[in-house]
Length: 369
Image 1 (cartoon, one colour):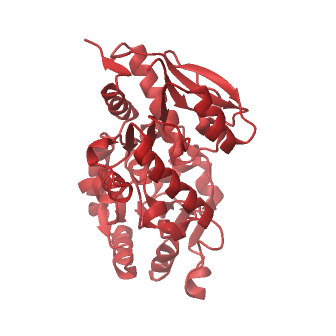
Image 2 (cartoon, helix red, strand yellow):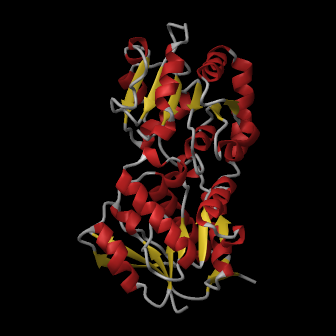
Image 3 (cartoon, helix red, strand yellow):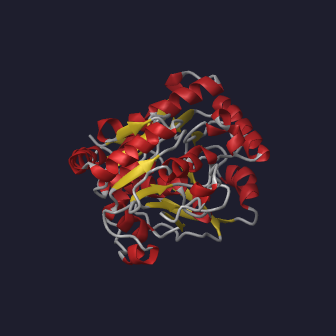
C-alpha cells in the first residue's frame, strides 16, 4: 500500500447523518495524527470532488486533492477508483465504488435489506447490489453499532471478524451555538413541549408518533417535529391527528435552532422502528434533554440505561411514555442525569481512535510508541 485514499464524495452532498459522520471523524483523526498520538505509515489523501457544497477541510496531516466531478455518481464509480488505483480506499459515508478491490467500506445500516419498502425500488436494488459485491471484494467493512454488525454479517454472508464497529458521536453539539429565537418562531415555551427529530423515511415512525400524541388529553401539551414535514409523514389515520393544533411542524432547521430546541424541551421522543445507530437521542442527552425512546434495533444498545423505553409499534406504550414525561418531573431529572453521563461515551475523538485502530489492522497507521 503506497497511499491511503479517502472518499470525499460527502463534501459535495448536503449534510445528513452519514456526511456528518465522515466530516467529524476525519477532523478528529487528523487532530490525533497532528498531536503525535498516532503515526501514518503511508500518506493519507482525501480525494474531493469539485465543485463542493461544503468547504474543503483544512487538515494538518491529511492531504486534500480535488478531482473535477461533473456527475457525482460517475465521479464515485469511475474517477475515484481510477485516482485511487493500486491503493487502499477508505469510504466513510455509506456509498463506495462498486468494483474496486481491497477497499474499506462503512455501511451504517442494512435498511435496504431489512426495510426495502422505505426506499425507491431503484435505490434499494443499487445498494443491495453494492453491499453484496463489496461484502466480498472489500478488505474490511465498518459500521456504527453491534446491531448493524450482526445484520451485515447476516445479509452479506461475511464473517463477523471482517466487520469493525466505529461508533458515531454527538459532541459537535457541545460547541454549537444556540439560536433561542426558534422557540418564539414556533410559538412554544421552554419545558412545555416534547421534541422529535427525523426524516420522512417511514422507519422514523412519525405517523404513529403523531397518532399517539393526538390521543393525549392535555390541551397545553405540544409536540415539535423537526424534519419530515411532508404530507405523507403526517398522514395519520383520522382527522383529529391530522388537524391537531398542538403539533408544531418545524421542517428543517439549522443546527443552532436544533440545539436550542434540544436544550429547552421537556423530553425528546425517538419512535424509530429501525436505526443503525440513532444519533439524535445522544445529541439530546448531551444538550441536557431527557430521552424516551423505542426498543427497536440499535437504540437500546446506544442509549443504554440513560433512556426510558416504549414499544414503537404500540400506540398505548408510546402514549403512556409521553404522558408520564408531561407530568413526572422527578423521573425526567433522573433521565437527564443519566443522559449526561451516557453522552460522554460518544465523542468524535474516541470514534476517530476506533477508526485508527481499524486502519492499524491494515497497516496504514500505528500508535506512537
